[in-house]
Amino acid sequence: MRYQAKQASRFILPALLFGMLFFTACENDLNKIKQVSALQLIQPIDTSRGIEIIYSDSAIVKARVISPLMIEYTTAKPYYKMPDGIKVIHYDIYAREDGNIVADSGVLRKNEKIFEFHKNVVATDAKGRTFKSDELIWDQVKKIIYSNKPVQMTNKEGDVLYSINFKSDEDFKDPKWEQATGFGNIGAFSDIAH
Image (cartoon, rainbow, N blue to C red; front, side):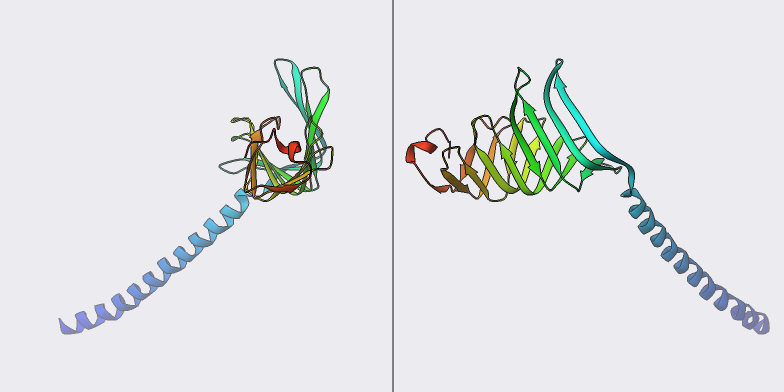
């Protein structure tokens, strides 16, 4: 019996070691497969050049989006990237341009209906005011535009207002500022909420 037990232990111990190595190797391979799969999930699925998107409501054109390049990514939350610049033109009810937003790059979060504008963002409104920042976010569901980065607003008379952030309705009619400072005619900022 002792001889058989010794022989059995000679085979069991190597078999156990081999099994442990095999399962460890499989686990590493599974981790690599998960990493590769995750990378593939954020790969672009479509690229469009020279795009123009029209937004309308009840057959009235509200805005037009223009970009030289749009890349579509499909993830749990699909989005479109416009890395070579973006321009959004807003129209009033008479189809007249009443403002626009221009930026070096942009992201459209499809399901959330959120436009993000990044780097050298310049927005103009119907009053001739210019808003500059490195970020501007347009939430189409909430119908607001905001920035969590410093913003500079200049009116058509040249008066300037600086703020650490900014929030407004999507037509820039009711902008709100935090820790605002500025220079120019005091009455120039009387219609601006702080």
